[in-house]
Image 1 (cartoon, rainbow, N blue to C red):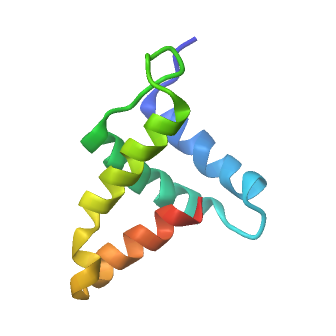
Image 2 (cartoon, rainbow, N blue to C red):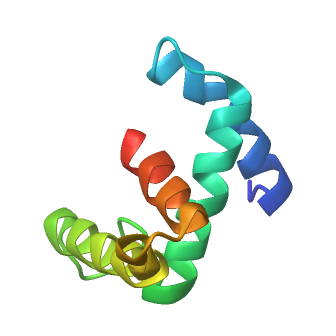
Length: 88
């Protein structure tokens, strides 16, 4: 069955502390929000897409760099987003 975006978000947040002990579902929700923003920039690839895992990770890293490029200029929000997504 297909899951809704809401179901995917809730399930991901709930799994986060299990996959990353010492974290919370709230942090998981925040990480997933930023991860989704990165995917909006570079694309949301599935295992069926003709792209390797390494290529997907490189694209997502490039998207994160674009999304948070102001972190080098002292933008605290960009620094927070970058640090939060890099946790996972």
